[in-house]
Length: 246
Length: 160
Image 1 (tube, rainbow over the protein chains, first blue to last red):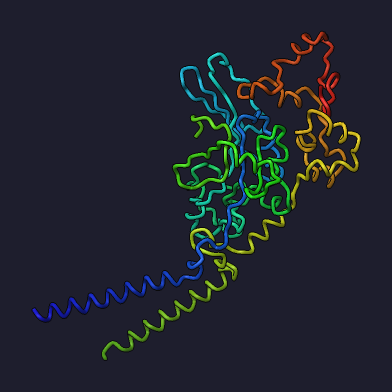
Image 2 (image 1 turned 90 degrees about the horizontal axis):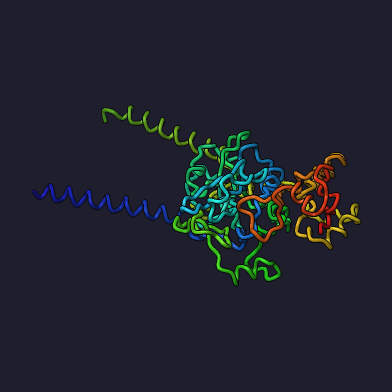
């Protein structure tokens, strides 16, 4: 009897000691102390669905700027057509790159509009969390980027993204996606899609830049994001977003 | 101890495995990996940021066109197409400047105009658009059979 009790106490001591070591080890991992790593999320992308005309210039310019392989898209345009009976029809032929054709049953459509989509550069990105090799990350400025040299092409991030913004690069066989034209923005330029948009349906800038037209919009307008319920905290904001848009 | 030799051998093998593991790891993992913050978002190769910054922009903005194409630039800057960048229709500056002059797109076919101005479901009602070019020409008092282009009446750089 005594022996059993002694045995139990002994084991309990070892367990506690081991557990304590594990916890303290986890806490001492470098970088845990400054969890944010000095990251800031000051850049915002704004899409105005009231203005988009679905010409596809943004999709074409993005392909040229970033050498996006055919049939892959870093940005694309969806057309929503909501029928008089409430049915929702969505089409996006070639991502809208060559524009849109008129719909055959125009009389049955209650309302229709274009919704440009792209990577949301979330504050809490799923895609970064699931990467097993540290090949996708959040830059100091809050851009979600892919390190093509580290990527092993497992595709976890492509599945994790709730917006379908990622694709497998057909040539490199690594994950790829919109960078908000990181290379341009860091040189003080606008993203290529924003530059070529003929109707100003896309805006980009820093939230704290008072000279930017985006500043006033962010302050005054009622804006929405896509799928807020996922908790990713997307940074692409939409003006005039219809309730049917997913 | 009866099994001392066995245990010793096992320990030596384990140590060897450990040494090889850490040696390979130190070669395979870049030095600047994981220096940028937390495991969840900051665990990456720090040099990747710089590599991405160095990519060369292809589209350069309308100001780049000014010096050589002053006449067109000034017409455009005063017109209704001012919101449309040069490169939206003419293609990227990079292609034009790096290769030949032919690389600049000069497409004044009706298709080029109709990409934006065709009446298509989804376009805002306030945006100028037409159902068909023939109807439009007929309504304006022209003859569709003459095969006129949009640019016969509208200057693409400064349309009416």
